[in-house]
Image (cartoon, rainbow, N blue to C red; front, top):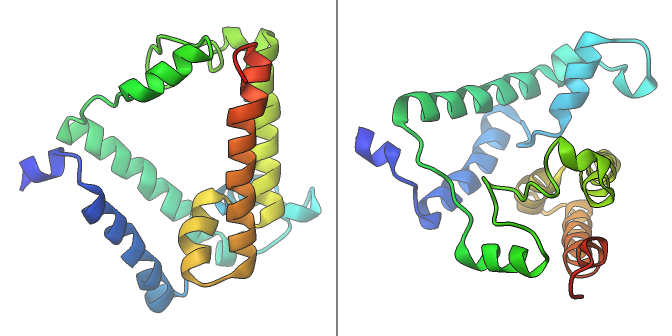
Length: 189
């Protein structure tokens, strides 16, 4: 059993397991799967009453998010500490795509030219980390949820706003990948 838990699970096991979590949460606890509401609940718990956005009953509406996020972190810690998590790698095809953009070889899972403390003082690093991070956070807040929340939970619940949000996420990601990133890095478009 322990050896089974140490191996990566194939998509046809992990995907349905995640998919079955959605109706389970809805039926058992009337809860929505998602993580982006956690930051709002954490801010409301720590600094209540300042901004209108954080004025809500986080104990009733957001405590579940905090417990869920704590469980995700604890599960990750247990997996690495006790199951000996394998080393995650980037595929050769992705390495080649990054090299075509002038990035790499990657030292880890992300190109250090974009994702490091030193890259913050470069234009590409600042745009990727600060501007990109702001846009992701603003977009998730404006859309009422993050990519996984809309794609997994919202689409499973047949919500039209989630379909629009997921289409927007994909279009934005493709536009950045094909047009903005090559322009920013000075590579081929």
